[in-house]
Length: 435
Image (tube, rainbow, N blue to C red):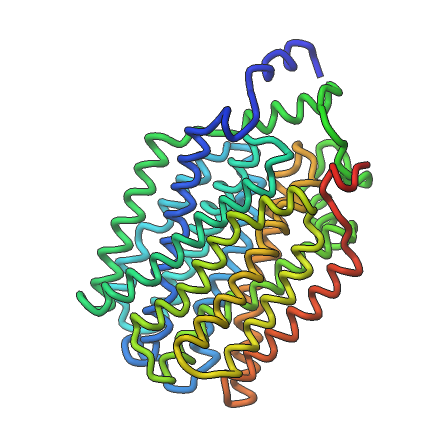
């Protein structure tokens, strides 16, 4: 790397404090991203039968919208990572908001469940492009020793937004009707987010290039991460994909854990509202129970991400998988709003332990030159878990004739996946396990 190029990147200072204004804008963005998916989480599945024509007991049909979401979002995560290394993070973020604009109108005019599935495809495009970029942009402008805290804050903001939206839309659906309530809420959130992106969000790709230039010039300080050695300096898409998926055991264990933990979120999205609605809860009460899951998940990440900067990533990930699975099983072992809320909270806390730290572990050992791609491919596998999980839930519930069996399937899957991380994974924090 030339002396001129190194000098060009000297002005880029990394850290939360040094980039606080832009960091704050990105936090607001991910809050709005969370609200966008949150508007589809309470009202739509609970009223699938009465409002959108899903026949009673059609578990496979009910899961189709989450299957579509998972496969689309997973693919767009993959695309977003590579695309952002070519055209920049801000443009990809804006494309994501453009994709979301038709969603509230499609819900308003939906004559059948097929329209809801189509709207969820666009939601998958929106989430794959926007959520990926808010995370990648924050990692671009902050320091390696802040990664757990940064991702924890990012996911805290997003999932608090999701929980808030689930509660608000429950009340709005009651006040204005499900379709008009979602229209008003959705248009307000999406238009605001797009305007903020245009007016205030800066592109952060140059910060990532500056970090890469420091590494190339031997000017990096602090412990050296355990980067994979079996990959080129400027790898192809296939090189990064194969590394993340099977060639590096650490990355493979992280990717499979990300995929399996989405079984829980697919269950919460598709079957929790149906399960609670059948037990006589109102839409507002369902919004609160599922909101507990989102609030605990989101709120705890404020601490669990930072915790991993001190104790490492491996232990929180493994324990998080097991605690989250236990919370799912607890849902079936008691009755009443208080019990279901407690169970949802246990799953939310497990999610908070594992969720930001899987991403932080990828960031620890992905080189700045291909970190955007690595995060995109991890998120591809992770969000593919929505599609695979929802499909598996539909099959299990259809064959057994009861949605309760889907809960047990998810609980066992989380236990086994945590064991894989325990066996295949290793501590990735550079300070605790340097090269």
